[in-house]
Length: 366
Image 1 (cartoon, rainbow, N blue to C red):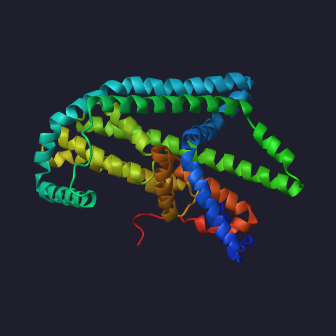
Image 2: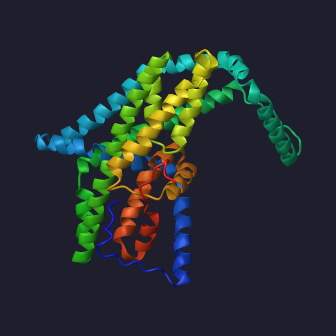
Image 3: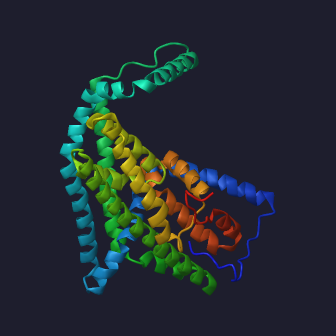
């Protein structure tokens, strides 16, 4: 978020002195967290649609400058987005199924290659089993899962995913049609000119900063996916398009995504490449690409308008992942950024906004 220069005037950052206010704020946070968790099936499509609207906002403005009606522009944007997702899903379904079938067959090979660490892992597994038996009383953990139960679980999961996707696309379509209608209505109900001005300032800053962030991150993730796919093809892995798309998607989740990608590419290398030293190259290549993107290129592009405390970013990831799962982890950073924008422009929350602010940093700094 944009910050004031050292020579400029400092905003007032009053700290709450009444403990009743602090207690009420904590109670409100707990109640809000519970409501977000219980209503996640309703709120998640709405929030995803809102951020997709911000991502598509530059394209919508470009279509509007071409004098294309808003309804036609919104329909074109949603159909294009759905077409890209469906096309990639159809293109990658066969390679993904191939690797899913190949994984059980390659487990003995993988176990042979990691035999040096198999004994500590087995000891840890036995320890966890013993601890679990002590906690639950030594009885069986539960009845075995039958095939019919697994099929019902898969059908239920597929239904939830399809339902959430459809509702998200519908909400995105209507948000694109609405444009700035909600902002105008909110400004109209504000009682004073100062309140109207503050609402407009916050709204424009959220739209500008988050749109720039989402667009920049998406472009960088596309480049990461392309370079990763080309690198895996150069190393001799099959289905490089699959690995490029996986790298693209994982890069939307800070910290957790790249760590998961390193483990995945290590496993793929172990299953596919010989000799043993070459099996580590997919992970090393992916790590190198991520370090260049995350610690050099992206911070340079976003440093002036997007600085958050990395410790609080990690806490936000943990919180939203617990609350909404993987979609929550993807949305954690932009949600934290929106919260900071609001805190910076609401005087009672200015101190909290200052606390959320981070600094540019590099992994090689002492």
